[in-house]
Length: 349
Length: 107
Image (cartoon, rainbow over all chains, first blue to last red; front, side, top):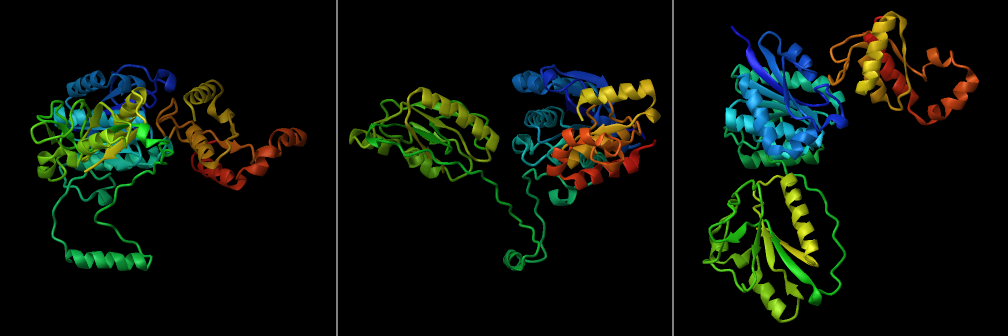
């Protein structure tokens, strides 16, 4: 039997080109394993081999995302892989994002499975976990010793076409895929059992892990709200009718900026929601329910606020990666500051 | 261990012969010191540098270890090292370094 073909994607550092001073190097491709690929070689054994390694500088990838993805995928495709390994990237943000972006492109364009490895807090996890089996690793390269055997084992399992267990069993980060199964006990009993275990201080596994949120320190209060310029920003997906920017109903890849000058009321004829995570009927009937332009116009007329900013910003919060949301917020906040906005009302769904 | 240092040690080992070399570490922390000891003996465990997959088998000691400390002029040691010896976790560092040395050093 011929060996399975694996292509490996790594950055300039693990590609032995150099550290940060070489992060600007464009993609290149070498035959056979390089760097961590040598460690994978030992784990993959006789069943699979790394036929090529694609190396790209982290900065180059981040600064030329679209071109980088296209070039890297083309290089990978030339070697006709059965599977692609990216990283492991540990907690390196740009590297993790590149590994994830390559995974997405490989998965979508070549329909080839991808194995990666990252620290759970790497932004690449949140953005791209749907497209790869990302093995949970430690936060720095010293974790290579454990990461490589775990990733290699999973790679062989996928190549052999064996069915995968749950993320906990296999050691990869949940892709957010739900699989139905018949439980021995009904839900209420399982919940009470968990509660009892928790009260006793025993170990238990939640069936529905809560997302982890960071805390944001509030800004000082607005000095005089009757003189403040107020802007509206929403993750509730309120867009002009027809959704001109095609903001996605889930996992939004963008936000929109919309002019509301002269608009006193959002109606079913002028606005709608693009959000796919709640019942849109009432938002479509009257989008003010999510983005209260009508009330703020009244307050503006009554002198309760200084003015309503001419533009509002909207995205869809449904399943949107925290890293993407942070980026939108940074861009939006910079524009709002530049436009002299004093305060923002954020509305969700 | 950074790429330049790995390259330097590899070059020295080739030039002088690995049996003629001992590496003395000054790392301030156990994990990093252990990584360096592993890198010069078994090879770079992070597979990033020139010593990836290269097992030089060099023995590495930390400057805090008695075997090295006793070779140093006490006055010099006192001036240069003893201050750090007071604030760092010496036992943990020595344990980590000696673990890798005993496991992988060939000389």
